[in-house]
Image 1: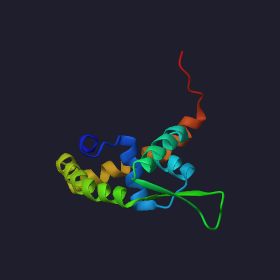
Image 2: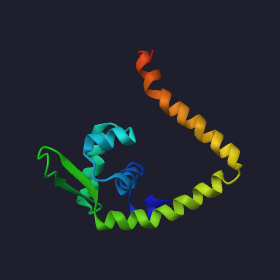
Image 3: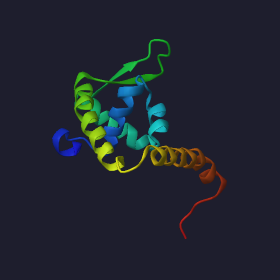
Amino acid sequence: MYTKKFDISQTEWRIIAVLAEHAPMALKELSEFIVIDIFSITRATSDLVKRGFLTRRVDQQDRRRIELRLAARGRKVYEEIVPVALSVERAVFGVLSKAESDQLNIILDKIEGHIDKALAERSWSLP
């Protein structure tokens, strides 16, 4: 839905959405928050900076840290997409009652809280 109009990928949209709510963030923080490898985050943020959606700035307290923030263009895209995304969410999840919605959130939170532990406990490899 946003790829055609704004020429941004799903990963780029996720970066914009997270920075809109949690900026400033460094690359590593962003990678951990979105749970995408640092290489993909680096490539996507570099492209978003070049295209005017994000800005990079040296943190004044820690000059080794580079902060990412939304540029005006990124904020504009965020403000255009969010109402549509919320409408889609309401259309899809509107079939659930309040109790069902609450239960789904509990289940998803439980799974999310267990993912790191489950993945760390085993050695996962392809045969």
